[in-house]
Length: 466
Ligand code: ARG
Image 1 (tube, rainbow, N blue to C red):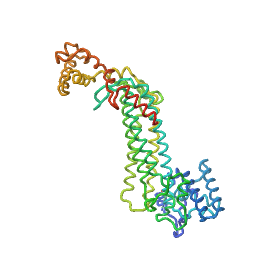
Image 2: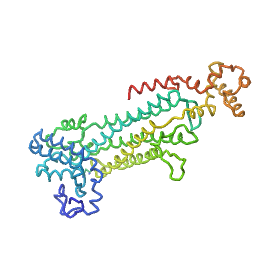
Image 3: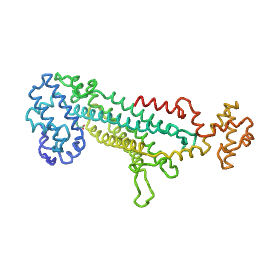
Image 4: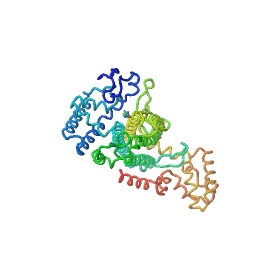
């Protein structure tokens, strides 16, 4: 049985009423050990808490509990050191551990499953795993936010073109653009924190679905396992995978944010834009074109979004229409979450590295910020403020100035005062104070605006919260 190929004898864990073992194909479709062995540490931690509670409540003896705990710790080190033989015929991590425990400590092992079912056991293991993963994500997002805060501080005064429709719109600062990502990843992190709060309830003790007649103490196990409290409804407990779906939803939203950043890095690092240069550590060369430096990591981050979205849709679809309480369909939850978690962790780490390492070409950004008549709105605003024109009229006057500059292939600031006054006589030489990109960004002091003074306030706000 140890090699997982013996299907003749019935299952030693639940085979009492079975005359023979499963067909090979049954074993193959049924087994989850190939992926749920990832839950070994959570499974053992849960079993130790359960056995300790059983002894405390007088449901098993203290001697049996000691043997069980000792055996479980032995199994933990066997698995951690790679000296554990997982068996497919034992289906999953729960039965692999319990079967090994029987070999190690004998009949006492059989008492561990008192007042418990694999249904609440798997709900516990998986919840513990997802909770730890969310905690890792929280940390990783904090690192990414810190990277952006540093770049924003460094470039609070660096002007670049701001875009709408990917067309030059108005000058902004690179610091301000970085802070837009801080807001996005800050929201992701608060979603992560909410999800941890939301799922912080212990499933163990719900048993198969109806609870148990044994005098267990679910508050004790909840506390031992670091949960706020036990879940309140045993049926819901074994049929709920919301915590996994919430994780995937959060991952999908964060992945979408990461893909937008990835796309901007891809665009900015083209020779045509030349806004940033990726470090050698985060780019690759071409095997045929020696001049190339490709943003592969950014492209892969952009693509990981597809996998994460796929996992979210997969698990929503797995759970859709399932009658209460547990159904084996739910075993398909884990691979989706494991895969998405790996993708998300990698994507955040790669982005943090790229953001920290990339070189910002401030000259290119500044040149681009001034092209495309990006200060046209400043001209119109000036006409409203200084000459008392209604904004619509000011918009029209500015349009004529842009058309003139375009016909002369020059910038707005390069038009002469006479030329501007010919369009509207109210214009004075003071207009030239607002036509530079620096003056434009400095003037946008509205709360949350792009003025360096405002950006520095935003940075201080986030520094205090990161
Ligand atoms: N391997 C199963 C899963 O991942 C564990 C729960 C099995 N429960 C059962 N009643 N067969 O969902």
